[in-house]
Length: 475
Image (cartoon, rainbow, N blue to C red; front, side, top):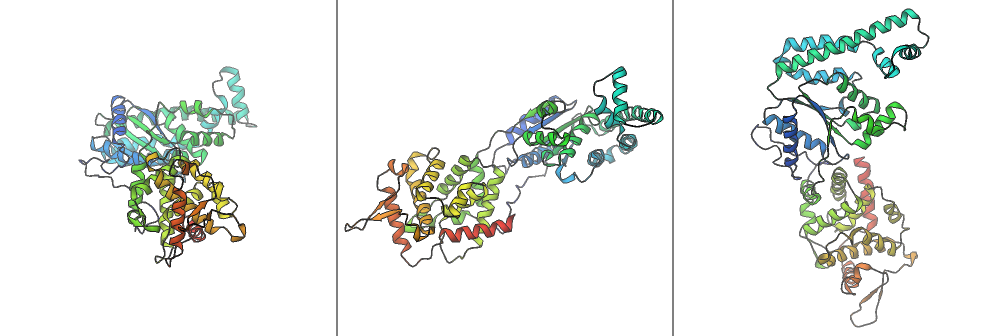
């Protein structure tokens, strides 16, 4: 079993000849090819946004695509905005990334730095820009005077002069930046990746967008922004202190083209996580109660189904599998655990599902658990594998029944007085109606016999304790 709390990063070949998407289990290389064609055909420069929800693997995709572009002769820069928002001045942060090409155009880069100085001095230009907007003539003067408050006329003239100097400074900066890019250019645009923009503090996100638009918008640079557009919209509203701002309209000023990576094959990714966390041996071909062999494919089907039902992101799924891995390490290896109960409870807890709390607090009835389970799985589960789902449901119901206090007096089953000592199920199960009417009863009957033997099985109280312990380790 893996010794890391986190899934290892996917290995990206960087020898310049091997496909960077070689180890991509989500088969996203085809999407990178489409985007490469786009940046190749519009090499004069534009801003592209990769818009997907947080936790869908955008960062890994960007890093693979970046290497793919390098293999094809593109110059690339990767800038993690979230890791760099400690640097208040965005221009400095962006220029520090461009500095990696300094040796290819040292004198031109010095000129860029020199022309950046006037732009960095003071904040008068930003103040005027927001105050004046599109106003002209006397109205513009009136707004500018209001923006500077009680400034004297001399102070106003001085600031207006500084404003004009900054306008000229911006043009000089962009001109020198263009010359620098031409120096390092090889007939292909420079691809400047900006990742994790939506995770920055709101004012920094807005500053990055504005500096890209007003200072770095020159021929020869293609900016690729990795964003969750909805979250970035919240940041924009937060930066301006108003929920009334139309963030979509605001972003149209900065983004020329938007692309969303299609949803990946979840089953393939879950298989990778199971193997990566060392859970393959535990879930696959493991003898469970009453002689049942846990089949890895069925366990992965269970994980995939609960992910789809609860709409869990790839990143959250990675966290869930890591949590399961640590929980297993906290348990006594001499005892047996029911994997489905562990998967079910960890997933519910990390998905912030209220039903986990109801189970932990013993306030959910057996019928409620049965209905909740079937609502999650029945619709998406293959009908020809209902007997497997019935076995999983039997495990969970019995485990929860054992967890409930005996004073509860709630019955899961009732024993008959026939020679075989069979049991009658005391709850209504839609799943059971789709199978042999005695299927669920037979499963639970077999479980009760196995629990009476000497093997030590982990009940739900032990599983919950291990989950709570793991939560403290990981968060």
